[in-house]
Each structure stands twice: as structure tokens, then as C-alpha cells.
Length: 269
Image (cartoon, rainbow, N blue to C red; front, side):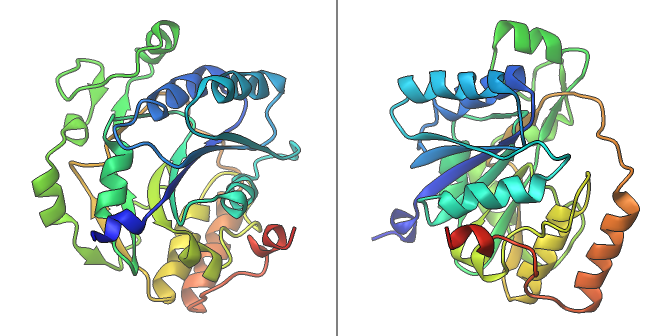
């Protein structure tokens, strides 16, 4: 029996008051060649428009679609992820942002590239801000390396054999992005999930990875598989970056393998 047959994937999609983008992400998630066992929308306090959208898809979907909402108390991405992962039924978590179009084989690639003792850092193609409104209007979820609106085209090219050969183990922190990442749920719980001391944009992904690496879980960079395309949008405010950098540096210097303020509070519920 192949090891991947033991892997059940929960797809966690983070969102905040962007139902138009989330609509496209859900559409792409619901037509996967290898569907996840569930889709969990991790909502950082959106208004009722998002809840209505999720309910529409839940009613029509062939797999569970779960909406995990928390009160809007500012940017609390770490907490919204933890709440979603805490209720996940799968033993493997695939994490994406709510503005990422997923290739039809996105879930297949994550599941078949998963290896015990590692996590996957995927890449992303970029859709220009200029062309994103048209995508939202037409609800077009497809993308190709030949599309004129696609930036960094090589990240939209799927070459599974080459991807497997290049997916080597590393301890690097360079280019960590939670918008396309996957890991075993037990590994996440062992390091106490994402650190909720992070508020405001920045570095919560890197600090989580630091603790995974310190606990013995190595990184594998996946290119030319697990393809996703990031819708164009303005950058988030970075007023919290200095404090978040400080928390990250503490985790690195202290060789931390866990955090105080993490997922465990939700696991006890």
C-alpha cells in the first residue's frame, strides 16, 4: 500500500472580507482531481457576505465545507489558522490564502509529495493587479504559463517528474510563505501551531517554520507541482513588522520548538 493512501488532506483557506476572491478559490478547490476530505474556511472576522458565500458552496458541495469564524479584533491570522486546524479531520493540512487560484491537480500534488518528517513549501504564480478585476468578474479560475496576465510564468508550469527530483530537504527560512504550504497535523500540534502573539501582518509563517525545523521537521521546496496563482492586490500594512521580527528572532535564538500562545487552547474545547 502506498504511503499516500494513509494521508487525508484538509484544505484550509484563510480569508477576511474578500468574498469575491474567495468565490474563485472555492470554485478551484471544489474541482480538484484528488479532492480534499474537507475544505475549512478560516475566517478572521468577515461580515455576513462571506458566511453566505460559504453556505452556498456547502449546500452544493460533495465534500464538507466548514466555516470557522472568529470575532474581528484586528489582523489575527495565526488565531484563525489555529481554530481551523484544531477542528480539521484530516491528518495532513494544506494551507492557502483566500486569494489563490488552485490548479486542478493542486491537492493531488501536495498529497503525493508529502513525506513524514517534512513540510512542503509551495510556490505561486502571480496575476497582475491590472487583470485581477476581470478574473473576479468572469469567475475564470484557470491559469497557464502562456497567459499574458501571468507574472513569473515558470511558477505556472507543471512538470511532476522534475518537481520530485528537485524537492530536496533543507533547513532554509528563505522565502517562507503560508499562502501555499502543507504539513502533517500532528507536527503542527506538537509545536503548538501558529503563535498568536503575532498580530498585524508578517513573520507568523516564518516563526512557525522555525519551530518545526527545531523540532526536526525539515522543509521541502516544491516547484513545478502544487501550482497556485495569487490574485493581484495592494500590499498589507506593515506597521507591526518590527515587533513581529522581534518575536521571530526570539524563536531563532532560543531554538524554540513550541510557543506559549498557540493551538492547544482550541484542542481542549
